[in-house]
Amino acid sequence: MKRLTLWIALVALTLPLAACETVLPDAVTTVQPTFTSIYADYLYKCADCHAPGAMGSINGIEQSLDFSTQAKAHATLMTKAKGMSGNPSACNGTAFVVAGNPGKSLLLATLDSSVRQAFDTGDGSGCDVDSITDMTIRVQGGTPSSATLTALHDWIAAGAKND
Image (cartoon, rainbow, N blue to C red; front, side, top):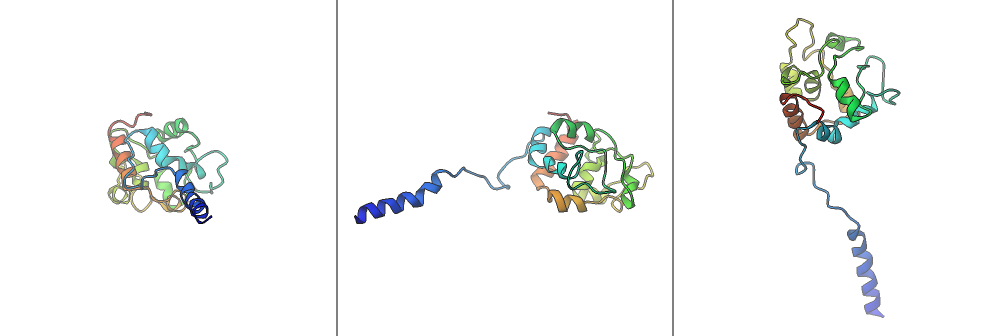
């Protein structure tokens, strides 16, 4: 009887482990410098605010972005910001992504504080560190990992294709 009880206890303790998947910590998982990988890793979260009828959408937030699908996200990232009010309004008309130039891409400046600190469109618009906000990103999507930021930088530098 003791052996049966011991066997049942052993099975009960190990059964949950059999159903577990191997999950790698964020530091080990690799984000590739492709739009598919970056969207799947982080950008899909932006749809909470930047998509038609999004629950997190508020007045003054950039209104032209649509992250509801990968294709729509890429298409709208190839446009310029519009619809922002208050201090961020200086960035209306600024390109979200400048293919081949990560340092001039508003998307990367919004997500990466080091890029934001040096950001200057060079057009006199006033879209700079003082007008770029990351508050909604920190509230809704969380801060992207360094691997995500590196992949995003490299993807933009390589031409920002929908790959």
